[in-house]
Structure formats: structure tokens, C-alpha cells
Length: 150
Length: 138
Image (tube, helix red, strand yellow):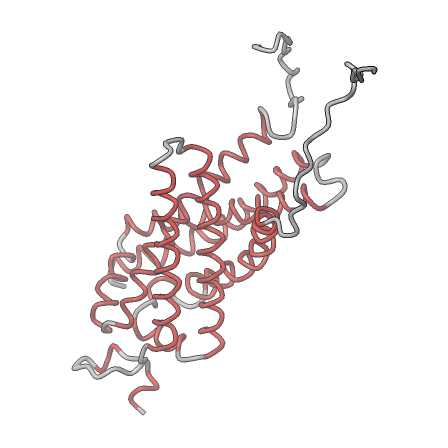
């Protein structure tokens, strides 16, 4: 009988690992870049329309926003911006939290808080955009968009 | 260093790596700081805009505070942060996806800063004129 002695200099081999078909971190990484390009366009357009044209910030009131969001074009612009910005920002904050929060109990707590904030704001913003009334009943008719008086 | 290797300080103008030291690292720091700031503003922005669902009076009361001179200056800072984050973000994408991106990362940072400065020169006077005209009640 002979004993098999393994080559002491055999190179280290990694234990076989299940090949993951779906790498969520890779998709998160790609999402940051894809959403980033779209957000540059959407947010620069948002800032230019609201702050540069006409009287800029002076013109922003219920009449301005209500008039804008009565238009499906701006509704979808704003809702797309809402979803992409909150998921992009939420994922960025997740990265920052993972980098700096080392407490084993604190980190999951902060991450869940972040998730709750993002989810609530997405639901709230989407509902407001699609359910609000640009011409509500009010005593101050002058506050409403001009088309409400017609 | 702990692994026994010695690290020589890179010569002036020559960063050791893309992300350690010099422009690569500081643009990363600025990207992070502006991103965090924008995220907190976004929370506030969505909540205050949601007041359009409450009443015209409630929304106008809150948006009125944005038209004060102090907030007007804060908005310039906010637009500056968004502008840098956007332009540097495009630079990061070029570093990641363009074959020569890493080679030209420093040049692209200066290009981003120049475009940022031009945008801010266009925006700042326009915005501050509106803010101060509002203050004067003109």
C-alpha cells in the first residue's frame, strides 16, 4: 500500500461556488448609470423650465404648478423624475451607509429607514401627481390656474 | 505601510491611481457630498410639493419661503450641487464605458468644471435678479 502525498506546491483553488445567474449589485451599478443619464436630461429640463423661463422662482405658486400638472406631459415627466431620482438617490445613500455605518444592529435599522422613506415618497408623489385637482373649491379663486375660471 | 512595502509620494501632478489622491479622489468626495445633500433636499421637495393635494393656500405658504433672499442663495447652492453631480456623473460614465476614459479622467474633470462654471454664470444672476425683485416687491 502506498500513501498518496499531495503536491505541497499545488496552487490554491477556490471552492466551487454556485454560479449566480442574477447579480443584483451589477444591475444596481448599471441602474445608477442608466438612470443618471436620464436624470441629467429630466432635471436640467425641470430647472430650466421652472427657474430660468419667464419670472423664474417668482412665478412658482399653486397656479403655476397646478397648470403644469394638469398636462399629462408634465405629469409623466415629473413622475418619471420622482421614481428615478428617489431610487438613484436611495441606492447612492445605501452605498454611503454601507461604507460608514459599521454597527451590526444600527446598519440594518438605518437601511430599512431609508427604504421606508424612499417607498413612502414614491407612493405619495405618484398619488399626488395623478389624483390632485388643479381647480379645487376655494374662496380664493385668484390662486387657481387661469383655465379654472373658464 | 503594514505590508512592508514602501510608498513614495507621487510627484507633483502625477496621482498614483485614479481614485487615490489628487483630482480622482476629490471629485469622488465632492460627488458623494453633493449626492447626499441633493437626497435630503429631494425628501423635503417631494413633501412640500405634495401640499398641492392639500390646498392652494397651504402650497403657496410654503413656496413663499423659497422666494426669500436666504432661500434664494440656498437655491443657487442647490443648483450648483446638482450641476456638479450631473456633469461629474457623466464623466464617471465615460471613465467606465469609454476605452480612453480612465486616461483622460483628469482632463474630463476640468472640462466638467468649465461647463459647470458656464452654467452657473448663466443661472446665478438670472435667479438672484428674480429673488431680489421679489424682495423689493417690484
